[in-house]
Length: 269
View 1 (cartoon, rainbow, N blue to C red):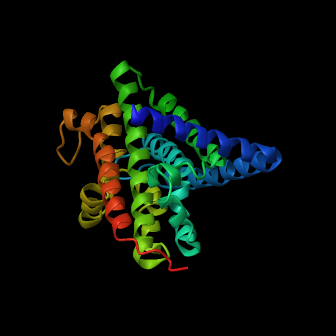
View 2 (view 1 turned 180 degrees about the horizontal axis):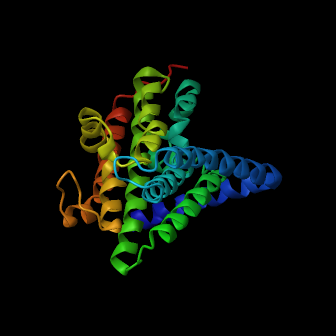
View 3 (view 1 turned 45 degrees about the horizontal axis):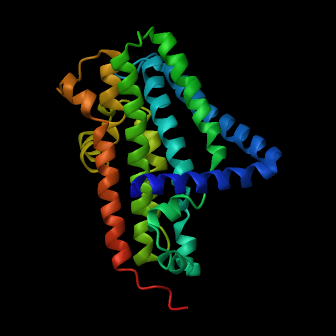
């Protein structure tokens, strides 16, 4: 019951945030279109790369577009839902986090509900367009298991990026400012996951498979959807189960957050 109560409260937070953003509808529309066009240029760069070289270690542009669509939708969703953690450093500096600790609600819930950035619908829509184009170009037969796997991949990817934002916010308890190195795993991770993990060097591939498991929410499920054999030797069963790793990663990130909260010493102001 407590979980459902928390979900209802989060829904109210999101509703308030959306209503606030809709007070400036022209700004919302222009910003959303701007993000749509900016991310569209990113994909045009990828398309130009494949147009010049034909393929990338046996992967076609349509197959790369499948990776791009999955990771873009997942990241757009996490950016919208976890924006409060991305900007958490300002709350620590101002002492605003102390106020949250006085309330009889989870700090994760309060920070997550502090801002739901609806303008990320621009990236979400652009990623969805690319995903649809990819499925048409590849003539993918969308059976029920494949649809379920696609949804699981997007959900797992959303959880993974939310986990990274939570870890980024947790670091602020000791550093005040979030470390720029985290951007290499969030925004840089998006760029990495837009391509098959096999094209990278061994150490780089292992990092984004075992440490920050981006491959679990893009590469492995995409292989199952495409019906391709994995050069790394993973089984079809593992490819279907891989998105769960993103959910587990988010759960571990929340434990790291709890550790950070227990060691928070306030601003002293």
